[in-house]
Image 1 (cartoon, rainbow, N blue to C red):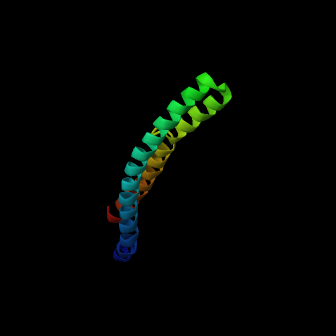
Image 2: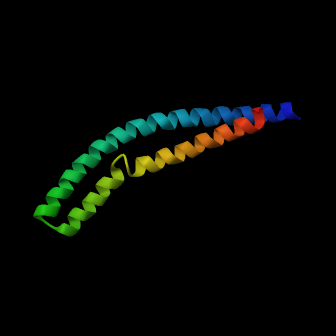
Length: 96
């Protein structure tokens, strides 16, 4: 019975491992690209805030925060950590 459970859990563990590796690479690249985009949007937001419209400037600064590595990429990293926790939980439970 225990051997069957190990055989059934092995593809799931391998799939989760590959998924985490691929997503980690994508997250690294996207955080770099979003960091550059966030910088450009933040500079534009400050310029709009000072010269044109405070409302539009604040909107641009909020968008810059969401695009920055502390915004949506950080939420993706948290979710990726939870996926890795799931993989380790399955491994610990099945393989001891």
